[in-house]
Length: 89
Image (cartoon, rainbow, N blue to C red; front, side):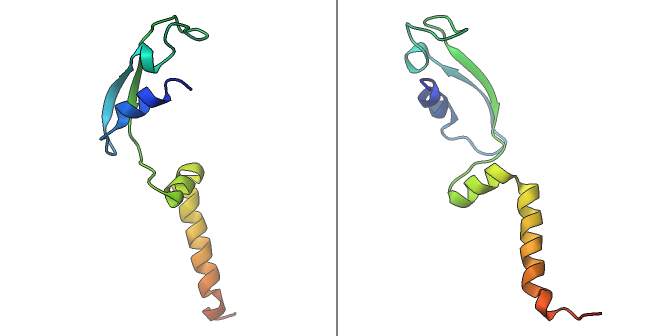
């Protein structure tokens, strides 16, 4: 997507909780051609709030499956790891 670079530039220096308006100029958006529903030479304006920042593979997995699922999975793994040591009834 042509606007990705401009959008990413607007996020530089952001931290979790940051709220900002990102304005992507036409030269980093759709330029003279425009796009479906976007007139030529238009600025793209996004209102964003940074909820999380993925820094590596683990963060990408967390972003995909969500923290609630990850916590449930971690509890399951922990239970399976200790289950041989639990008393049987």
